[in-house]
Image (cartoon, helix red, strand yellow):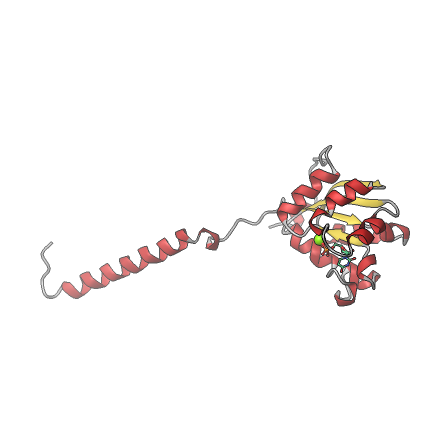
Length: 189
Ligand code: UDP
Ligand code: MG
């Protein structure tokens, strides 16, 4: 291409803009994580009401909070879990000093095992429950409203999508229940 003295600055400007745009695109593509992810309305989490929650009669209260937030209940059962089952559920904590006490606590009575589906279910589920130590849990969270001691914190929630799927398979090997959630169109955009 022949550049006349007048068109040269315009050519270089266009060239640099194109170069910058290509570089930006390259950076975005190479860091795939930065491309905004589609919202996942079908994320699932495993929420369990522990034996103290069952004995204290707050099963309905805990379930109510997940229902009213807009999550879809897709599995639920009352079960007195065996020691090996609980050891499997908490296998990541087997080396912790509180592990034997935790298994004894969890085996002391029935638990209510549930699975909930909805946008950001894992993280939001943990927010609804509060922090592990109820003394640090904000009022308005389940632990912040109903518990004081870390070893009697009334509920469990999965801490990652990967662990949620593992826990759902462990507690519901028969699978969850498929049905149409008629309220979903009024909860999700
Ligand atoms: N736990 C305990 N003492 C501790 C830490 C945890 O008794 O110092 C119990 C508590 O019941 C907790 C459970 O072990 O809910 C699992 O611990 P994790 O760190 O996974 O907390 P969570 O995910 O339940 O908030
Ligand atoms: Mg945990």
